[in-house]
Length: 516
Image 1 (tube, rainbow, N blue to C red):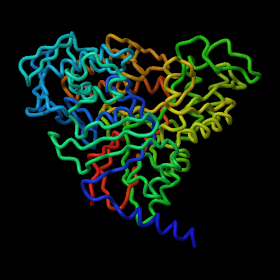
Image 2: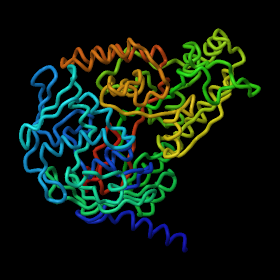
Image 3: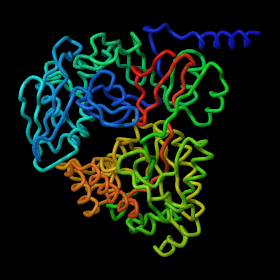
Image 4: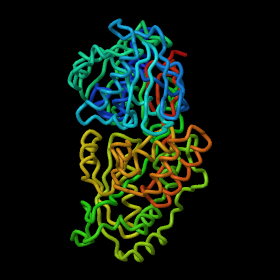
């Protein structure tokens, strides 16, 4: 009887949605590590930043560029972009947004210690404040990507953020933006609390208060939704989809994501960590520098089986670093066919007839079924003679190690609204001055790919730019710069009374939730 009462109470709580204008509680799948919008370029942090701050350009649910704080932009000559700011926009402290704040925000990306957003401002060599609502940006050479890059640069208050470091954003002292919500509190590893900005320039959010709860484990996140402690959750485990769909009190929203899951392989060191023969002796040379080995590992992976069985159909086998709807996707590239015998032949040709052993590193709380995927791929590699020991870590422990080069074969996920931008970050030869290779943890380098990207970025002709982007994608993928696995189909689950427009970029925006 007590168990029945608990079930009835949980059901009544789940069906009772807070009134319109009250609070919304959302379960996030990954830890939020910093409030500073110019510090760490990782999706959980960016997701929160979009609630408090704005950028000059936005993207819609299909990842198409649309006006944000800038109502228009144009190239007035080969190396000058002019942005017209939206009038009447105010920061949360009441101060009016001006071009000075925008210029300051761009400059701040260079000043934050170890900040990762300078990739998006590296090409800007000059700033001219024409008037309070007009800003001109100069590049050293023709560069068509300025409006796209500035979608990733959040605009902060010059007054509030002057001399502010990440700790000042975490405490709330510098958390003054123009976004739909005001900052209330950040408790690392637990929650982020926000309040509605009634003076927001855009559509008024439906919720007076939003609480983002950090719930990295899948069962706990789902339990929070079922118990009524949460109103909506992101990154629903694929194994739980049938259960959620059977529950009349819940509903889901899905969309093919721009995020591609792939493996990067160390290609820049003669000896890479974790690589050894079957007896455990470190290898004298790095096998991943051999194209045949990279191709063999790709052939050993049964992408269709992962997509259909492990992901329950919520994934598309990948051949590109962006998903099919995204600009620059090369449709003639097809996912690598599963061919274990071909993989064995290639390994033997490369001098590894008995295979070798390695560590396969992955996150265990960042991507849908990430640890399970890693374990499944390890089993597939074992069938062709490659013994892979899986090392799965929480994302906040994984990323620092990845940046330090501690992994030789590791999982990563990436989302971008164009193929050339994805290639710029992931496979272009590292060049800080150009903003190339910020996440090129493979150490891959191909001057021809770099040249094609440079030509694409210099072209304001969209058709020509896309043709060049596709050529660069073909070259990098046929060179196995990385090994693409699949494109995620992202799922949100929520109470039946809620509606959410699913986004290609996977972001979970509280201001896009509505009551039905």
